[in-house]
Image 1 (cartoon, rainbow, N blue to C red):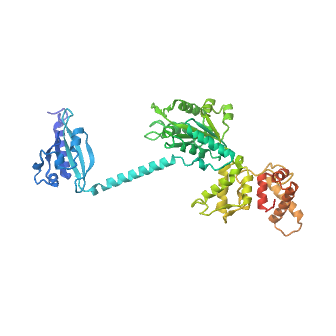
Image 2 (image 1 turned 90 degrees about the vertical axis):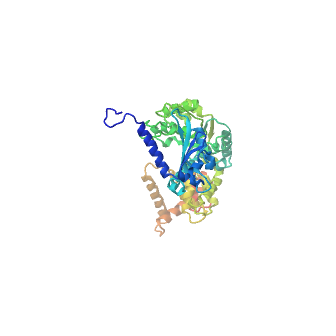
Image 3 (image 1 turned 180 degrees about the vertical axis):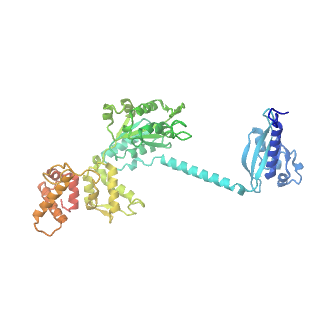
Length: 503
């Protein structure tokens, strides 16, 4: 029977039967063996090659036998019982393993009436490219997961917060208490005081230690991308989003800790959304109607004055109160000067490891170097201390570091003290520094008129005598001498070391 289209049959069943028969014959010809079983897993047909493989001279001898009797370890019965295919499997038979495929056979009502099996290959080398690719992908996936898990694991403990001063011990006590509860923690302190280290320590000793530790630096991400960074996005939510969508940090941190660094820089609109997530423990990714439940412990940190931001209307008061459950103040380095020696040696120990600049050398700080380190106020805190020591280590030719070695690097990243000699006016423009230097040189020349010393030597001699007189007038009290001559105490210590002045 024909349709209106010339040559196109109205009944496709014949073509379907032909296709199925052709497909079966193709598999039967190219595979190492083929068999068919009934609903009781008894063999109803097996080709000669497959029967001979299992010791049957005539394939008809296997008809009616249970499949396991003919083929040890066969899973054809499982296919019949479950009605589910086993598309690619290994069959161990005492010889070379076979790569097999098993498919259920069903009637018009969908009932399983039997199964057909194909032994595709009898040599593993036929699948070597496939297995090699699969193994390589698996290894890369495992390595990526391990690397990601390692990156989201606590790297520091409370022992990493070096120091035994009263301020340091109090911080450790509060951090230990924070690890026992699941409430939000707010870390306040200047930059470089070790707030991130405390976050790792709190997470690593908490009940969430086995969960991920995910960090978001609010100040480092453009405001327009922060919402997606936090909550993720559905596929196609905006131009450039991944085809699978984007998973937000709240979802990644589920079961663990989410560290919000520099939260004081968070834009006001996002503050309201963050507050809602903290209260409801759920959110919707951008462009999605999907509700995501989250179990996250929040630790926030900032170097800004949050109460002042609240008063100025730049930070929501309700979010501040929600975060300000347990507050820890990370003290600046100048508030724990007694820890500087231990910190310095801990940093030098780390720098001495191969590849860190110290080339395996063991460095020792001389007494004058320790005095110089303790006298400086360290506006950059521990981060600046590490930077100073790292520069000294890289350029030092000896393992014994004295004040003369350190002096050029201390405070190099901050503005110099205003005024360097008694009665000098504060510098109002860059040229004033040169004017001050010229006055020093002029004074030095007056001390040694017509002398043959170099400009630098004349300057150094004059400065040494001048500072010695100032120190003698105050009985060797450096802080008082510095105040009298209008010089910063740290600067005076550096000059004392550099000019080898005995105190």
